[in-house]
Image (tube, rainbow, N blue to C red; front, side):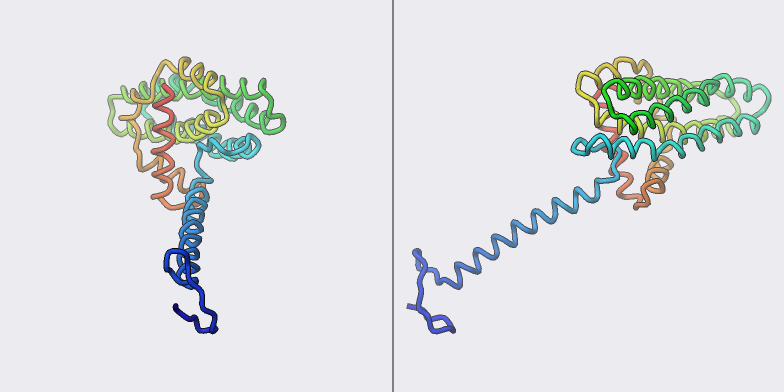
Length: 237
């Protein structure tokens, strides 16, 4: 019969002392708390991720709107890039990106409309416009890749990729709050698939853009980009 420092003699049913049983219980509780903490840390790390299935529509809508300044800035850079190309390449590039201003303005308007009124109709408009713009961007990437002058081609691809990054982030956010049926319809409307333009993109530049937008490390941004990319591919984009 063991005796604890307090002078009370107790024994667990299996011969383990009460102190040992308490220690075991505390260890189990600590283990459980640790698991909960780790899960909480993971969720906290993923909060800025442009793909949050558990996030409410209002926070996602705000996140979408938060991407619109970067989108508009990137589109402005595309307009400025055309002037840096040779006359022949400028004409090709200008034609390929002709609808960017209109498309970006519509996407910004619909993102703000959905934030103000997160209804099924405003979401449907947002779904349509983000896919429409994504397709315009993908088409322009393929056109830019055909520019023969290496320096002009690189400038063109870099400019369009900045737009593609913002549009892809918004697409991932919209996907996260859309039904499976709606996502399938969006993917079906995407004639130019991600795999067709992916070789033209600089993955590091995308990661850096996401890291700067969310104020986080490149490592975390890389995981976010990879996750969003995987989800988009699985959806059929």
